[in-house]
Image 1 (cartoon, one colour):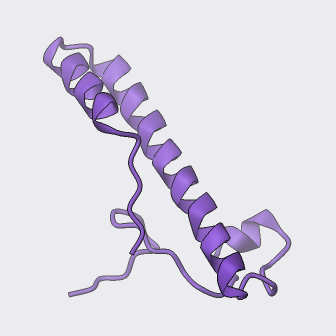
Image 2 (cartoon, rainbow, N blue to C red):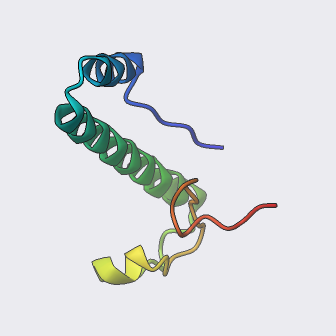
Length: 86
């Protein structure tokens, strides 16, 4: 199990912007926070796969990596790659 977050301060700031009616700023910050979370998760996932010794057969092209052409998938709820676990 892997859980990442940019922290409570980001959530509090997003909430404050929403409450102030500053929706564009809120959406920008929320998007940046979400992308940072995904980047951190992907970095840690790559490190875990290297430590497990299963990263050697990874695709070399970025678009192939985005199509999960590597061993040891990482699923993220809310994204198409996450299967319906029901």
